[in-house]
Image 1 (cartoon, rainbow, N blue to C red):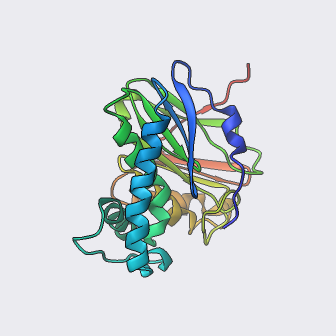
Image 2: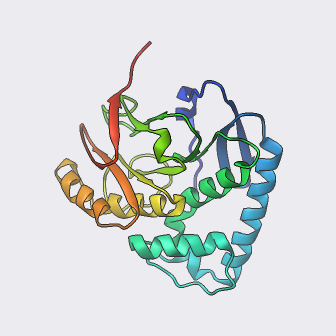
Length: 244
């Protein structure tokens, strides 16, 4: 799998928080917290990866399947969460891995920082008491970087995960520039973003995608960008990006 530089991170600005990156193996996180917790974050990442990699090594179908896979009671917590999300959304377990990692790291840091934002390849998990503005990045769509999602403090903790057929390594059977899902659970938000993205093949499919999002239990809101069109449902509140 080829690596794509996280160029969108140049536009990230979280006033009042310390922002740092944690890179270990294929995991590349940007984290904002009340202080530099990079050492603690890397420890969390190493532990999570070790558990998941050991499980995948013994159960390769978990990583290979594009449909839900049952896991046993002895599977690590992260694998169980991914499998549950995959079953609800109707996709393979690995469709939820980035969102699951983002949540696990954020919750692991929450005891040391009241405000935590973990970004993992465009998938976010946000914990705190301040409203946040999430920029929607959608590749070469004219709407890319022009629209933001408002995440109120009342919704947090919350996951905001994005799947794209145009940007990054996400596997998609559709052609959406961006499908962004809000959910309380990171694995579910990520899996749902993939499931919705699979049914959007062009701008005319945006209504179909929004209906698919609403049909997935646990989804709080959804935004779909295809070419120069956008649609939203649920608790997704959009705002134009203000240029200073």
